[in-house]
Image 1: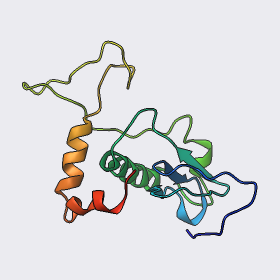
Image 2: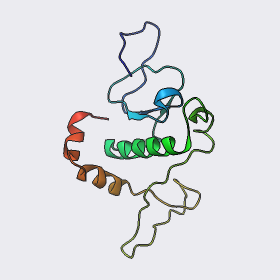
Image 3: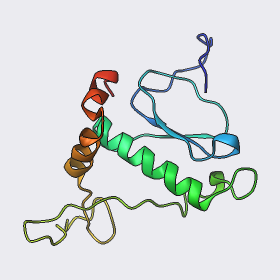
Image 4: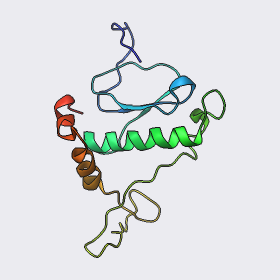
Length: 140
C-alpha cells in the first residue's frame, strides 16, 4: 500500500513473490511484487516452489482475490486463520487431445494427480486487453 526508505537491519523480501492481505480493509488483495520489498503484519508472502511465469502468478493472484472476497469478510471471518489450512483455489488442468485430464503419477500438484495448465493460464493472461504489455512491466 506504500513505499518506505531502506530499514537498517531488516532484510528485503525477494521480487517475484506474491503477497496476500490476510485481513482488514484489503482482505484478499494479492499482488505480484516486481521489486524487492518489506512487508508488515497480517500479510502472507507466497513463494512458488518452482519457476513460475509472471502470467501464471497474475492469474493465480486474481483467483485468490476473487475467492477471498467471496468466502471471507474483513474484521469478521478473515483469511489469516484459513489460508494455510482450508483455503483453496481451483486452477485449470492440463488436458490431452481428447479432452481428458493428464494425470501425473507422482502427484506433484494434487492428491488426484491433476497438473495445472500453466500454458493455458499464460495464454489467457496474454489474450486480455493489453496482456501483451504485462511482460514489459516486470521481470519476475
